[in-house]
Length: 307
Image (cartoon, rainbow, N blue to C red; front, side, top):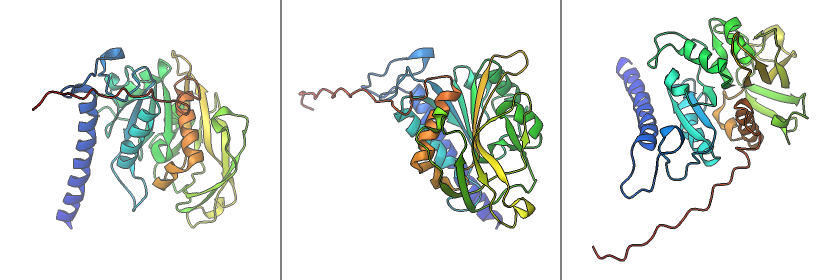
């Protein structure tokens, strides 16, 4: 069993290293014969990347839970490509972002279990102070699923509007999550209708009080063993939060509580919502990512020289 566990961890870390290398290669290595040139802020203008786009940092975690659930590494791989194709400049990692990582970032998107455990011993430095400084200068946060779980929900709620206390049984596990869109006029929810996902819902969260969150969608808590007496309650699942930390600039956060089932990231309504929400959190036009059209590529000249 010990050897099997070591093999699993080794495989996960190998996958993390491969993705991290891909990011490094994209920003640091110019392929032979490439026309890539340094772009804004000194980043390499990788072919196919819109270097004038908003800068997004993806903070992911290692795989947890069962097959098809909490697939944080797959999300990092998939959404780095999706967001690049939609005109963003993307960076990311499996470790908390450092101050350097966030220096030119518009939006921090988090899909990592218990990311609200912010400490001072992260590889990039003190992640708590780095994220606080990022939010104080107006940086946006998008929190997905259980990223807002941690030991101090009161604190993390000051960043994203609401948070879950780690260890509390306040979830439904695998169950229907029927959405009621309570603010259909909000542009983030454009074109969205009431529908049901098979996923996991959270309830009895700790909420920020001043200001409060703006709820975009709720669900009725399903009747599952973990729901207990909370079955039938109406609980917010999607919201926005506009606030300012003491001494800081106005900042935005968006929370989508689902993502337990990874396939739900491919739901058309969810994907369009997330693209609009990321742009909104970064104070960019909401249609910037959704409507982005890559310029037509210039055919590479064919050499007539004989080998």
